[in-house]
Length: 302
Ligand SMILES: Nc1ncnc2c1ncn2[C@@H]1O[C@H](COP(=O)(O)OP(=O)(O)OP(=O)(O)O)[C@@H](O)[C@H]1O
Ligand SMILES: [Mg+2]
Image (cartoon, rainbow, N blue to C red; front, side, top):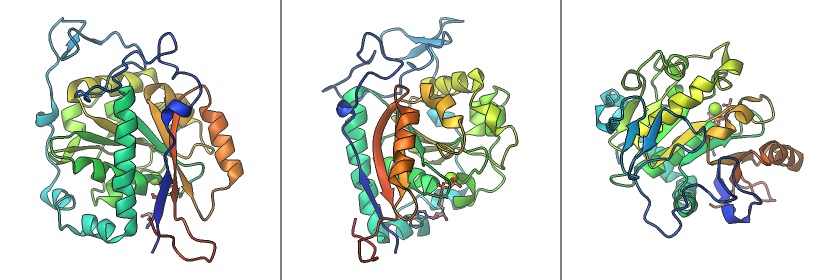
């Protein structure tokens, strides 16, 4: 059985502030404060929304509060929802796997880091393809979504090889390109797999993958999404770091990156190259070692 272990570095150990911070400190530092609902909109400085008293975002265009739209998102078909219920095959598959415990541990460590800094937008990416980015993103989202009353949004942004819809048996669902371009309303694009988990899917590979994440409208749309849904955590499943420049284009829109390394193929050179890509652009929140094995070739315990 494959195994999942991880190394989660303390974000405080990283040098330099994130690029969207002011004066060397995060614009919103909630250290030692209770995590407040909602991911902030610090990345782009979008003029579309603003907070009045820190509770509800308001539209700068109309000066009216943006409604909390979480409950308006449609629920996924019953067979998809069942995959997220206790006792479901998907959950049970992963819960039998020692890796499930590692994901819960990763969730705890990640939430501690996010709460300490008031962060909530996480990119998950690997150095090269097939390392387990989608596997990790879905499992981490599932783990986060098991927290009662929480809100997690899982977004597939790997337009070249989208994987979340197929994994969840939702083939053909999700016009992510239309949504990011502002042509498809959020409530027609996102679905809730459970009360605590929203999904943004890609139905099929897209030839325009290279342009989509470079388009400023994509970032604005995602910022608006976080303003109106007020999720605790947004997880973005991104393409391989070293094979495309999509991640670099998207970095301004996330608070940090979780890198998935494949114990059977990722090398130290790969990781160093990824760190160079991220340097000065975003926080490397941690490196998850997927498919870890012991020196004897056996799967390691989580
Ligand atoms: N630890 C693991 N245990 C069991 N199966 C795994 C594990 N990691 C990955 N897999 C399986 O390996 C395959 C590739 O994983 P995944 O799709 O997550 O890779 P990826 O990094 O998202 O690939 P791509 O770069 O093409 O998007 C999938 O079938 C996935 O379910
Ligand atoms: Mg993938």
